[in-house]
Image (cartoon, rainbow, N blue to C red; front, side, top):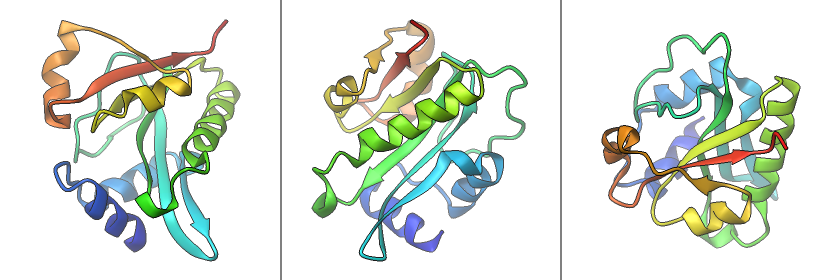
Length: 154
Protein backbone atom coordinates (compact mmCIF):
# COMPACT_ATOMS: atom_id res chain seq x y z
CA UNK A 1 0.00 0.00 0.00
CA UNK A 2 2.92 2.34 0.54
CA UNK A 3 3.67 2.53 -3.19
CA UNK A 4 -0.01 3.17 -3.99
CA UNK A 5 0.00 6.05 -1.52
CA UNK A 6 3.19 7.47 -3.02
CA UNK A 7 1.68 7.34 -6.51
CA UNK A 8 -1.56 8.95 -5.28
CA UNK A 9 0.36 11.74 -3.55
CA UNK A 10 2.38 12.38 -6.71
CA UNK A 11 -0.62 12.49 -9.06
CA UNK A 12 -3.37 13.91 -6.84
CA UNK A 13 -1.57 16.88 -5.30
CA UNK A 14 -4.84 18.82 -5.12
CA UNK A 15 -6.99 15.88 -4.01
CA UNK A 16 -5.10 14.25 -1.14
CA UNK A 17 -6.41 11.23 0.73
CA UNK A 18 -4.99 9.53 3.78
CA UNK A 19 -3.43 6.07 3.36
CA UNK A 20 -6.13 4.66 5.65
CA UNK A 21 -8.77 5.54 3.04
CA UNK A 22 -7.17 3.23 0.46
CA UNK A 23 -6.85 0.52 3.12
CA UNK A 24 -10.55 0.93 3.93
CA UNK A 25 -11.55 0.46 0.30
CA UNK A 26 -9.28 -2.58 0.01
CA UNK A 27 -10.88 -4.09 3.12
CA UNK A 28 -14.41 -3.50 1.78
CA UNK A 29 -13.84 -4.71 -1.78
CA UNK A 30 -10.50 -6.42 -2.39
CA UNK A 31 -11.59 -7.62 -5.85
CA UNK A 32 -12.04 -3.97 -6.90
CA UNK A 33 -8.59 -2.88 -5.72
CA UNK A 34 -5.82 -3.79 -8.12
CA UNK A 35 -2.30 -2.66 -8.86
CA UNK A 36 -0.62 -2.34 -12.23
CA UNK A 37 2.87 -3.76 -12.32
CA UNK A 38 5.53 -3.44 -14.97
CA UNK A 39 8.79 -5.37 -14.60
CA UNK A 40 7.99 -6.03 -10.93
CA UNK A 41 7.33 -2.35 -10.14
CA UNK A 42 3.91 -0.93 -9.21
CA UNK A 43 3.21 1.82 -11.77
CA UNK A 44 -0.52 2.29 -11.22
CA UNK A 45 -3.63 1.17 -9.41
CA UNK A 46 -7.42 1.10 -9.45
CA UNK A 47 -9.79 1.23 -6.50
CA UNK A 48 -13.51 0.48 -6.87
CA UNK A 49 -16.39 -0.75 -4.72
CA UNK A 50 -20.15 -1.35 -4.90
CA UNK A 51 -22.16 1.83 -4.37
CA UNK A 52 -25.34 3.69 -5.30
CA UNK A 53 -25.86 5.52 -8.58
CA UNK A 54 -25.96 9.31 -8.28
CA UNK A 55 -24.27 9.20 -4.89
CA UNK A 56 -20.70 10.42 -4.62
CA UNK A 57 -18.58 9.19 -1.73
CA UNK A 58 -16.79 12.23 -0.26
CA UNK A 59 -13.04 12.31 -0.75
CA UNK A 60 -10.85 11.24 2.16
CA UNK A 61 -13.78 9.60 3.96
CA UNK A 62 -14.20 6.04 5.17
CA UNK A 63 -16.91 4.03 3.41
CA UNK A 64 -18.64 2.74 6.51
CA UNK A 65 -21.06 0.02 5.40
CA UNK A 66 -21.48 -0.82 1.73
CA UNK A 67 -25.07 -0.55 0.43
CA UNK A 68 -27.17 -3.72 0.72
CA UNK A 69 -28.51 -3.24 -2.81
CA UNK A 70 -25.81 -1.43 -4.77
CA UNK A 71 -26.76 -0.03 -8.16
CA UNK A 72 -23.25 0.52 -9.48
CA UNK A 73 -19.62 -0.25 -8.99
CA UNK A 74 -18.08 3.09 -8.13
CA UNK A 75 -14.63 3.59 -9.63
CA UNK A 76 -13.00 5.67 -6.93
CA UNK A 77 -9.59 6.13 -8.51
CA UNK A 78 -7.56 4.84 -11.44
CA UNK A 79 -4.00 6.07 -11.82
CA UNK A 80 -1.14 5.12 -14.10
CA UNK A 81 2.15 6.97 -13.78
CA UNK A 82 2.52 9.38 -16.72
CA UNK A 83 5.62 7.63 -18.06
CA UNK A 84 3.73 4.31 -18.19
CA UNK A 85 0.54 5.49 -19.93
CA UNK A 86 -0.56 4.71 -23.45
CA UNK A 87 -0.97 0.94 -23.20
CA UNK A 88 -4.70 0.80 -22.45
CA UNK A 89 -4.31 -0.08 -18.77
CA UNK A 90 -7.27 2.06 -17.66
CA UNK A 91 -9.53 0.37 -20.19
CA UNK A 92 -8.39 -3.06 -19.07
CA UNK A 93 -9.14 -2.12 -15.47
CA UNK A 94 -12.62 -0.93 -16.50
CA UNK A 95 -13.22 -4.26 -18.27
CA UNK A 96 -12.31 -6.10 -15.05
CA UNK A 97 -14.70 -3.86 -13.08
CA UNK A 98 -17.52 -4.54 -15.57
CA UNK A 99 -16.94 -8.26 -15.02
CA UNK A 100 -17.08 -7.70 -11.26
CA UNK A 101 -20.28 -5.66 -11.62
CA UNK A 102 -21.95 -8.34 -13.72
CA UNK A 103 -20.98 -10.98 -11.17
CA UNK A 104 -22.69 -8.83 -8.53
CA UNK A 105 -25.78 -8.41 -10.79
CA UNK A 106 -24.98 -4.72 -11.29
CA UNK A 107 -25.22 -3.14 -14.73
CA UNK A 108 -23.46 0.19 -14.27
CA UNK A 109 -20.14 1.72 -13.34
CA UNK A 110 -19.87 5.27 -12.02
CA UNK A 111 -16.97 7.63 -11.38
CA UNK A 112 -15.99 11.23 -10.93
CA UNK A 113 -13.74 12.42 -13.73
CA UNK A 114 -11.08 14.89 -12.55
CA UNK A 115 -8.38 16.93 -14.32
CA UNK A 116 -10.47 17.16 -17.53
CA UNK A 117 -10.21 13.41 -18.15
CA UNK A 118 -13.87 13.04 -19.16
CA UNK A 119 -13.02 12.58 -22.88
CA UNK A 120 -10.80 9.62 -21.99
CA UNK A 121 -13.54 8.05 -19.84
CA UNK A 122 -15.98 8.61 -22.71
CA UNK A 123 -13.87 6.23 -24.80
CA UNK A 124 -14.71 3.52 -22.25
CA UNK A 125 -18.47 4.08 -22.41
CA UNK A 126 -18.92 6.65 -19.65
CA UNK A 127 -21.32 9.55 -20.16
CA UNK A 128 -21.47 12.77 -18.13
CA UNK A 129 -24.52 13.03 -15.89
CA UNK A 130 -25.52 16.67 -15.44
CA UNK A 131 -27.29 17.16 -12.14
CA UNK A 132 -27.68 20.19 -9.91
CA UNK A 133 -28.18 17.79 -6.99
CA UNK A 134 -24.65 16.45 -7.50
CA UNK A 135 -23.00 19.85 -8.07
CA UNK A 136 -22.27 20.50 -4.39
CA UNK A 137 -20.72 17.07 -3.86
CA UNK A 138 -18.55 17.47 -6.96
CA UNK A 139 -16.94 20.65 -5.62
CA UNK A 140 -14.55 18.75 -3.36
CA UNK A 141 -13.22 16.97 -6.46
CA UNK A 142 -12.08 20.22 -8.12
CA UNK A 143 -13.36 22.61 -10.75
CA UNK A 144 -13.20 20.14 -13.63
CA UNK A 145 -15.02 17.30 -11.84
CA UNK A 146 -17.81 15.54 -13.70
CA UNK A 147 -19.94 12.64 -12.54
CA UNK A 148 -20.04 9.93 -15.21
CA UNK A 149 -21.90 6.64 -15.64
CA UNK A 150 -21.38 3.66 -17.91
CA UNK A 151 -24.67 1.75 -18.16
CA UNK A 152 -24.25 -1.63 -19.79
CA UNK A 153 -27.71 -3.02 -19.01
CA UNK A 154 -28.67 -3.05 -22.68
